[in-house]
Length: 344
Ligand SMILES: Nc1nc2c(ncn2[C@@H]2O[C@H](COP(=O)(O)OP(=O)(O)OP(=O)(O)O)[C@@H](O)[C@H]2O)c(=O)[nH]1
Ligand SMILES: [K+]
Ligand SMILES: [Mg+2]
Image 1 (cartoon, rainbow, N blue to C red):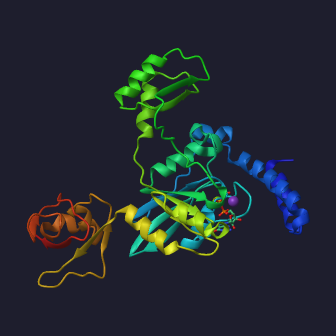
Image 2 (cartoon, helix red, strand yellow):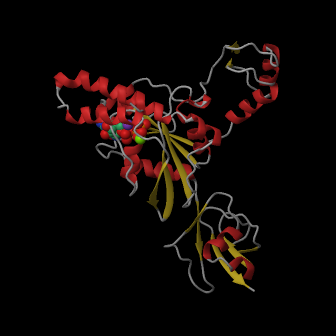
Image 3 (spheres, helix red, strand yellow):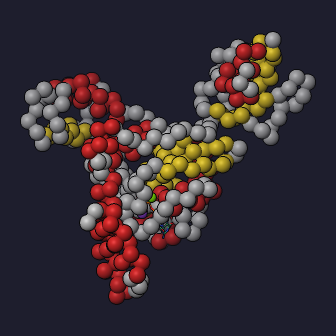
């Protein structure tokens, strides 16, 4: 029997089993089995791994947010709740096997939200298509790290900050190119004085440096604790006070507005208002751009050919010394600037 057949057989059995105290244990086993087979589906087949197939989804909208987290924390439930896209959610792990995009409309902006398979230990080494999931996360402007509030003292995924203890060095293979001394020298070069280093392959010093530098890619990240309907008020309060954290319940639709507010803050998008000569700015319809966008980006947003007819622009706001100030196409705009474009 193939994996797909095994999966549908278990699904049929779950469907026809009545839910009650007596069947709880049996259902639990079935779900664990289902998760095991679904995890196998997630493992890249030899052909797709060779092709390096990822979860490429076209970028669209004003910004991209990726949903990352362990299986069954509620990522798909969240996507279905916040966007008009439905992503299948279920009480077994590895329900989601690919990347599913949806759009959040907020303050006039279209924010692309990506649902992804749950990540598991060893994801960075490629387990459970972890590499592809991480690759998608890297293309996002903000990562929502979703956590299950009922799972107690879950460790946040990612590098564990070590307060002290210096550098510990371990290896599961014989190293022919890197030594403990060299690793220490390299880490000191990057001002890392406390870390746990574990080699799983015989890599070169250059590859080791790539890992360090790669790990330092800065990703704005919001930790979202879901399922707070299942925990005590005291516990909710404790989680909510953690840095960069928001507590929510998708099931009971709790605190979702606040999450959107926070997400908006983390995205730090730039809103630009346009103004026609002799008229007041139009504050009802902002042009939404990423941080660092120039006058040229504004032009492209208004009309494809505007940049070619551009003579100069007048800008009011924090990006200029004087208000208004005459600027060219390369001028970098700031949040809530007002612009008037003068054509040739
Ligand atoms: N009590 C409670 N259950 C929730 C909440 N949000 C989601 N769930 C349940 O959690 C289970 C998993 O939800 P999913 O949305 O499938 O989780 P996921 O993170 O997408 O899971 P995978 O795709 O398998 O990684 C489902 O049974 C949901 O109904 C919540 O706020 N409270
Ligand atoms: K699930
Ligand atoms: Mg899912």
